[in-house]
Image (cartoon, rainbow, N blue to C red; front, side):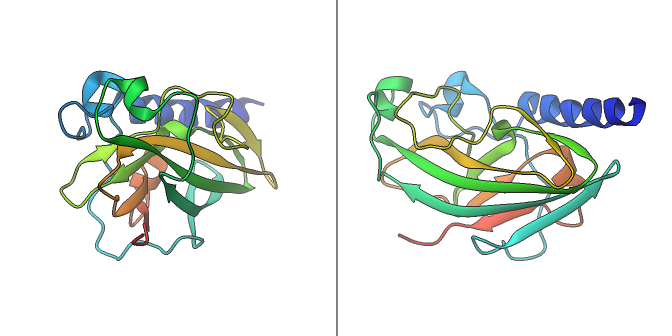
Length: 190
């Protein structure tokens, strides 16, 4: 039980570090620049980003997790509140990233708050801190415990500039920073 508690504390610390990081914020007036929480920055990647659907596996503190970004969609769904209404911006829309994580060994706590979108100019946007009942389902959890052999899958919503498309989806937890290369997936052109 003590090992399980120590592992849970490690994952929670990784979560807290990612949420309190001083990562780059999006352009002024954007949801992240407006104080909605900037994403932590992974280190530079010497390799090309993964294709959507390709797994990224990392082992740390006795846990091995395979994570995959399955899909990216922008401007295809509308909520009862627009991204602009929610964040007081102009020209933003909702985007959806579908994620799956499967724990091969150990114990982990996963969260959607460790994900970010990165643009060509280096701007990064974290997931929306709000959710509505009409957001795409199933939602990736705010925080969930995962045991060996279990998977968690769901969708995470981002408020993004409607006239721009991100280049990459990033997983920004300490776990991915300890890997040889950070976890990042290329977003296909529209």
